[in-house]
Image (cartoon, rainbow, N blue to C red; front, side, top):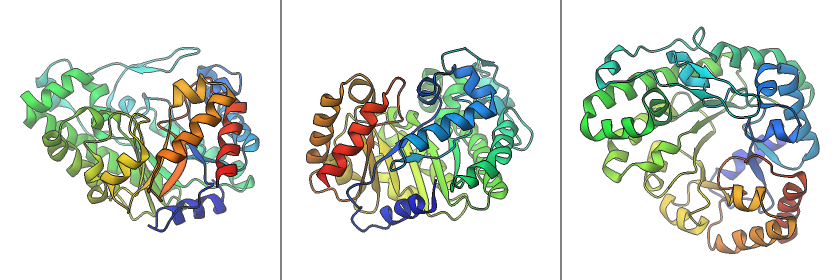
Length: 344
């Protein structure tokens, strides 16, 4: 991310009205390999192909902010691998982390990993260290410390249905698991900041938050996410949840979030009314059904509808309701951006 782009993001979260022509997308391994005509496995295993894939996106769309920018990641395997999950790899599909918790009694055996040594985390940080000079030569910096959220990690270690049942049937064990994961996540974020002093943002992704009720959100989401978003002083505290976002939205400000990417199933005006004026929204074109599957005319029409549906919401960065999905064409991305510019 360039200094100018980072300043645009910081200005956007100050509470003043956002400049209306800012477009930003979350990009990572679901989209970048196909965009570069390489396999998913090549993207993960080759540092050079990873770098060139990200560089091509930036060179092709210089006026769009890509978040978090040169994301070093191994899909959903990144954090679970540190706990000992077996990672299953595929040539052209995303990897999968196998569960390590089969019974509730297994939770007591979960130990906090060390982000310096465990799982894939050393490979994440080493890739960034290796390519940092090339990233900086392009005029970009590493700005975000990144992690999956505690409920998301727990669901991979245990299974989504099993973990959600544990929150109701075995709350003590569920809290123990989230305590270990949260302490690990804080260590991981702080280690990234230690390695890259230019980091000034925290980016947390947790879709499982969208599947809980209000009582569970208060008990199992708010306290742990609050600790994580205060891992260190940062200008941007970015939360991604493109599952149902209505439950957590009223609590985001107290958690510490100031930038929120949410599901396209909620309107911008609806989410804005729940989060309040101090949280900037990133959204919310349907990513799969419009941005990926639609033709340019459909994208342009949907972008116009999105802007109109924002209503009185002023703090909006235009994007899709989630990360960039597979198979989005360059033409559709250009159409999205040009439509926003023409409307601003």
